[in-house]
Length: 160
Ligand SMILES: O=c1ccn([C@H]2C[C@H](O)[C@@H](CO)O2)c(=O)[nH]1
Ligand SMILES: [Zn+2]
Image 1 (cartoon, rainbow, N blue to C red):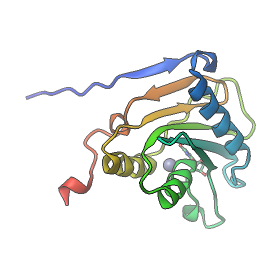
Image 2 (image 1 turned 120 degrees about the vertical axis):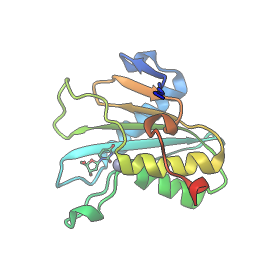
Image 3 (image 1 turned 60 degrees about the vertical axis):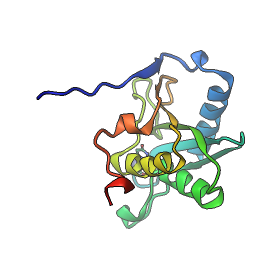
Image 4 (image 1 turned 135 degrees about the horizontal axis):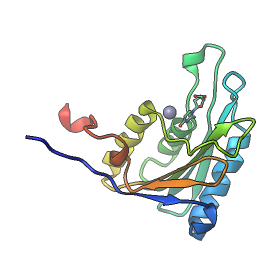
C-alpha cells in the first residue's frame, strides 16, 4: 500500500511580508548571527526563540578546534532556553544563516538533522507545535508550522 506524506509551508519572498513579531525575531536572529563563533567554517548562524511569555532569547553557532565539539545555533539557543525556562512553552523559532561573505544567491538555511531531532524533543514535551522560520541574509524566508514537518517518521519518547 502506497502512502503519501505532504507538508504545508509558507514562503516569503521578502521579510517585508512578515508580521511585526516575525520581523522582530528576524532582526534578533540576524543580530545574534553577528556574534557567531565560526572561525573554521566561516558560516554564521543566528537563532531567536520566542516564548509564550513574550520574551525573546537568541544564540548562535559555537565552533571548536576539535570540530565535532562545536554546536549549531539552534541547539545552543534551544538548550539555553530549556535550561533556564523549562516550563515556558516555545512559540516561534527564527534561524538565519549564511557564509560570512554573503552572496545574494545564498538560499534559506534549514536546521540540520541533529537539530531537528533536538527540536522535536521539546515540541513533543510541550504538546504544542512550534512555528519554525529559516532564512538567509537575502531576506527570503520559509516558515513551517511544526518541527514534525521537517522530520517525518521522527523518533521520540513514545517508542521507549
Ligand atoms: O542550520 C544550521 C546549519 C549549520 N550550522 C552551523 C554548524 C557549523 O558551525 C556551521 C557550518 O556547518 O554552521 C548551524 O548552526 N545551523
Ligand atoms: Zn544543527
